[in-house]
Image (tube, rainbow, N blue to C red; front, side):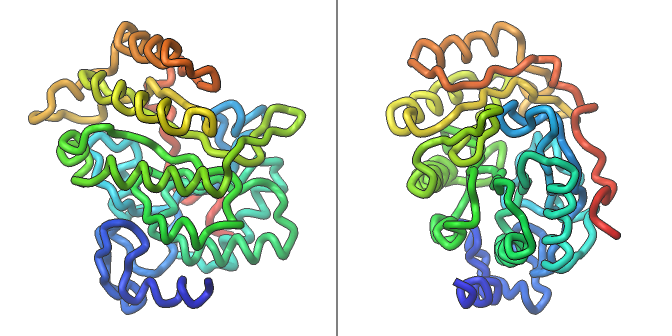
Amino acid sequence: MEAYWQNVLESCTLCPRNCRVNRRNGQIGYCQETADLSVSRASLHMWEEPCLSGKEGAGTVFFTGCNLRCIYCQNAEIADGNHGAHITPGRLAEIFLELQEQKANNIDLVTPTHHTPTIAEAITLAKKQGLTIPVVYNCGGYESTETLRNLEGLIDIWMPDMKYGENDLARKLSGVSDYVEISRQALTEMIRQQPLPVFDERGIMQKGVLVRHLVLPGHLKNSRIVLDWLWENVSDHIWLSLMSQYTPLRAFPDTPELERRITKREYEKITTYALNLGFTNAYIQDREVAKDSFIPAFDLTGILK
């Protein structure tokens, strides 16, 4: 496994983009990152799903860069590879342990895909030094199954987005033409590794798969396609989070429907659709979270000593 992590960055195939650039020599992939680990924030976060945040908070670690180009990205400030500090695997392991000391319910890795070799090293180090809380892989869903397989045994909770059921929409809004097939394959691998959810006595998830779907204004058909596939293929294995938090942060001349929040009626249509399909292990979100004030400040909190 260690050899895989060493070699993959010399011709990067960590994600399905398969850029094959030599990130170890300083070349930048689609993710906008070299091999250097870049992190923008580490802190307790109270606004994840209740089974992750609980009363104490999730121990979120935000990585810079991203392998998607979602035009509505709420973390665009760091998705372009900026606003981060370069740290070592040893320092990342220390951050994990510091969050555990702060009583975090888990280590919540936010957009980790393109930094997985360093993250895997840091998790291994931290576990040797006393890390016991679950590790959450919080991603956009566009994942390489080979990378996921090489993370087996290190990740306790998989939390992918399943953004799209239509590739045309994925291409238009996130710059990727095969999102549907790739995200379904990735989810299947995640479930293979963690087939059933496990909770502690407080109701905090310790193992499992939690799938997020952000309901977009004007695109209810897309949401229905996503829900249909999830119900028909993996409904017994996952928890579902239907998110209403879409927040328009700028103008979208080519997609004017994204210049507004979803309406109460739109969200109710999708939640009702999910319930009518038969989903019971599902989180339904308060529309009040659709505010930019819920986006954390990417100010290197918790990163530097």
